[in-house]
Length: 119
Length: 107
Image (tube, rainbow over all chains, first blue to last red):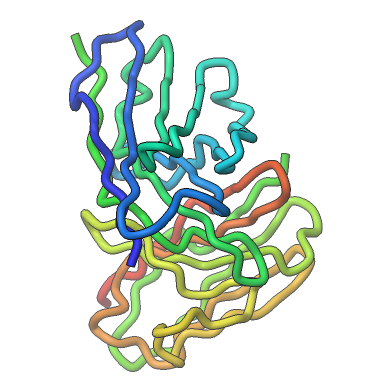
C-alpha cells in the first residue's frame, strides 16, 4: 500500500520561499498524478497544483505565479516551492496521489504538515 | 474557472437521520465529481467518484447522484462515525476544484 510523507520546515518567514518534499513509499511514482493541496486552519481544501510523473504540471491559477512543483523519480519524491509567502499561506499542506478510477481521484494522502508563515 | 458551491455549510443531524448535501457547479461538469470525508486532524478520504460510484470499502449508506451542474451526497442513516466534514471535488484535464465543505454536526 502506497504511503506519502511530507517533510520540510514548519516555520517560514514572510517574503521567503516555502519548500516541501513528499516521499512516496510502497509504490512507484510512475503513471500517476501527484498533487499538493493545502488547508488553512479552520478552512476548506485548496488544490495547489499537480505534476505528472513525466514532468507535466498544472497549477491553481490563483497561485500559478508563485508555485513550482517538481519530481525526482529516482528518489520517488516530488516537491513544492511557493515563493513570496505571507500569513495567508499558513496552512496544513498535504501531498496526494491521483489514481484513475473512471476519473482521476485523490486516493492516497500524506498526513499533512502545518506550515506557519511568521517572522 | 469552474466554481463548486456546497450547501448547507453546516448541518445538524441525529444518529439515524437521512442526510443530503448538495454541490453545484458553475457550469456543466458531466459526472466528473468526487466526494470526500474529512475528520479533524486527518487527511480527506474518498467516498464517491464519477458522481455516483462508491469507492471500495465505503459503507453502502453513502450514495451519490447527479450530473451536469447539480449533485448530491446522501447518507441514508447517519452513524456516529459519520460526523465529519464533506467536500465535493471536480476534476478536468487541467484543474481540480473543491467545494467549500459541509460540516455534519451532532444535533
